Length: 471
Image (tube, rainbow, N blue to C red; front, side):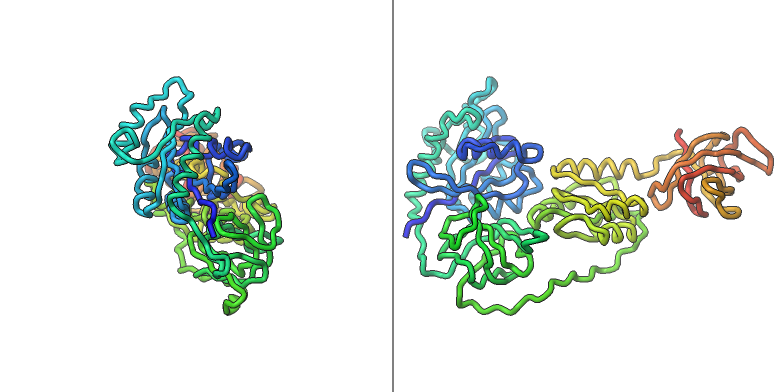
């Protein structure tokens, strides 16, 4: 039997992939996407002149390279979208290479022709230099000028896709075991593991045993891409599957049948990680949480491929909300907690305040990248005037404390405000109430001088800590 084509939209960030799908589906997905950028693979079914088509929208940001490759692997046809006002960009070239490597037939959509600075001829030349020769320009790659914003040229683009699908002669056997590819994987507090995918062959039905390389289970519920509960699904259909015992890895193939035999995965156990030294003077430790596996992998990719001022290491990672356990891990290893498209439990928020653990959340991946850089810059002591604490005298009385130290870089003045630091971590702030040098009150003391201090601080001060003063 013939099946509808699966089409992947690929191209550089902001070149109009999601806007094109918006127009095709007559919805406004872009407005709901954080920052207007699609950050996980979504699959959508439409109908054009009586022909069904399934579209996969892939992210454009460089951090999502693996997700784009998953999309191309499952697709029958790719649409390479290139903005006429911006031309071929790094992710355009990457998309071309992925399509060639996966041997995915593709057509080109030259977008944003409605813009005053659109340069279609330059875009064609850019594509030729990137190895894509269009029809009428020395090659055989079909293409169409479009405006995803106004819809100009979009019906003709869909005609090209339908023609390409006919040439592929796409078929499936409804009697075969169901098979497809996992595109998304996450956990729902009520439903359990929720996996999204595209069916490639056979018929998927509730009650079937389902297997992927990393997970298995029994299909308890099938939803279509609109969220409607359906008893079965046929190939090319985007499906949401509930029934895996643990989260399958994005990009894995799955198979489902009433005759499959699988061993119960039992309760998923968290593997113990190798011990990580809590001393973070040479590293920034991170705890990562995300809403789903694909997003988590994307976040890890961007962290691993970014040059930060200090080495960065991931000590813990997971899917779901940021919990008390995440905060405890962060406190133990002096780590920063990053939440990508996820939330922080109230109890975790309260614990983070008492443990002075920093949590940064954002639904936009490159904002997290920027936040890490800013955090490192703020949390790395600059060459500031500073006192190294050598000794404390007696217990603190409220916020007041008597300490002794050596001025490593001065001068330091009486009544000055300071920051309390330990192991490149800011613990609090305070002020000198009285400064003594040589056991006498002093208005100021210079470098290499040992001093006694009566201070007021919102954090207890211990030997080995640093008091930092603005230059």
